[in-house]
Length: 270
Image (tube, rainbow, N blue to C red; front, side, top):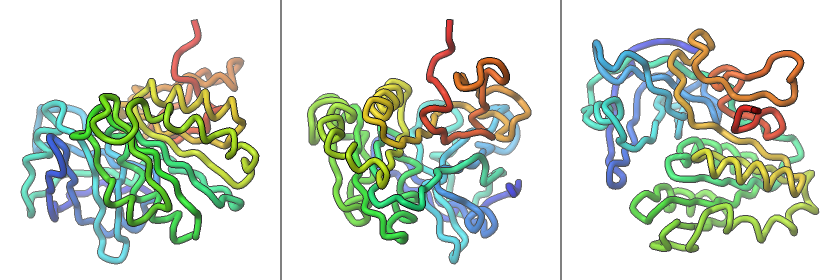
């Protein structure tokens, strides 16, 4: 069950231009978290901003009682978080949402991360390695300065592939363009493979198309605002094509943020 509490900042590390990893102390959240879940953070005491901000649980240590979030400074809320100092506290609700589902037959995980969509995957990869699942990470960003996690994944994963839109690091192009040539050989092993993806909407659309085309089990974690985090504000709907006669949408905060690619679409039908 999620809790709401004031969590103490343990450390705040700038890991790139405008990129931060903040570690909070809270034993209950750390112990209860699963890969793919998120926390909703009040970015300052008082207002504004009015709404909390959702962040994937990037890593956690249940024994030491801490969890981390990763983010890019893009507005007032993230700027306030970037200025946090050790010892300060922020009100946090979590863990929230549904995490990644792992098949008992899973032997090889394909991680596809775009930009700050890398956030949920250090936690997931740590869990996968404890389960002796082989892991391939496809990490993409617009430019080299926006890449994060390469060293961490190099330690944890079996292989790491890097792409940048501008060619400043690794493959010159989109991360899905780097992945696509490998999918035909992987499709023959579809019962033991799963794809896990998080990133901007165009990337997720491309991953969904590839997963469906090659009939590979695929889950996506959507990046969207989730003001309340538990289904009250109704502000994070996703189109639900599988149930057009009934519920026309799913809520990212309680039905997601992780979805099977056959559960949702990225655009509303016209």
